[in-house]
View 1: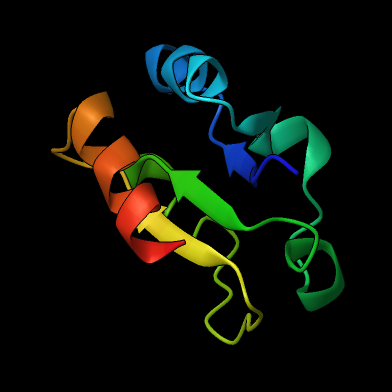
View 2: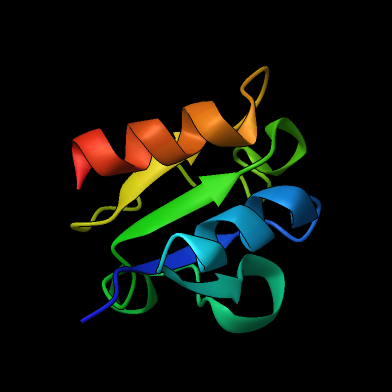
Length: 85
């Protein structure tokens, strides 16, 4: 089964790369519910620096890996996903 990753809408090149690498990629802003229940549906969440703490929530917990894409290339993010999942 493909790993499910929610990706910030602003990271289109990354979405394409992850899809080609076999990940099930969804748009974070349109698909993901930012709650513990919603986050548990995803193996990982990749946000741009603009999205970090967008809603002022600091107590979200769950099993999802959260990656901040700021300053990272799509390849670096893919490698981080592979190592952390």
